[in-house]
Length: 333
Image 1 (cartoon, rainbow, N blue to C red):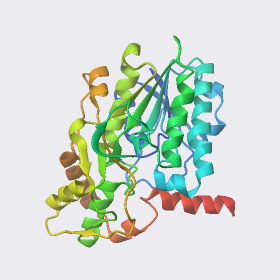
Image 2: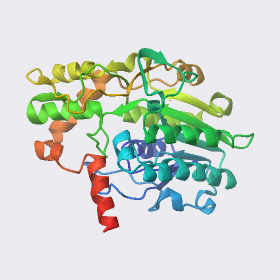
Image 3: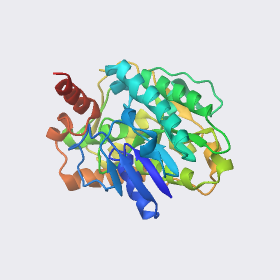
Image 4: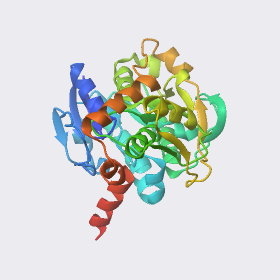
């Protein structure tokens, strides 16, 4: 299979590129390189590399591919809030245009990296794909709008699917610490404090970033009828946690670290648990490789191996918002 991956040098894309190549697929990677230098381990190379904004792609770039896996995006709520217009331009307009081009180019399958953040706030009641959507940010709303547009393109020759990913965490060659689990563990290592910026009660479904990448491979290889034009939550029913549960897991790794509720972010409006029965039904052979304990142990070992320090925690390298803000300022100046 020949696969076109956008954002292949990113947090999830680094795992996805390696997994696809290991499975024998040919990979064309497309990445603008906004976060070049932010990786902490060498990134796997695609068979063909495009340094290009997804909004500048043409149908010709996509011709000959069997599947498009679209990961590239302004990648979380705080980054989206920094520049909502840019978020709409990249995440909605760029994504819908890419789907249009993929169909025009004769690509048979289009896999979109969505988010469980579309559910917004519901508390501990686990929501499924038919639950009411409650997007609280431009990032989440852009994901919904893309699903709505792309679903209209589905036909016998074009199979889109929408992977509503749980909140990512864990080790990647393109490390991020602006993710709740990664951040709590990093602060414990650097300062001996597990710094929770809310009251710790919000619910989050968690999934290791490599398991998201594994899901994309499974969707690419799945029978058409299993995924055709479906939005499917990606995660595990046992992997819904309150933020304070994640802090407890960190403390199990670092017993001397103290849990500190800083409250600096105020009440977190995002508060949702998610049901993943549809994933288990559509792809019964797909199982998560990681639970939170295994994923956090691996990340802890990696932090130690790399000598992760307070300078790393406070710098730009591993926080996408800081890196993006700095580089956008340079482009605009």
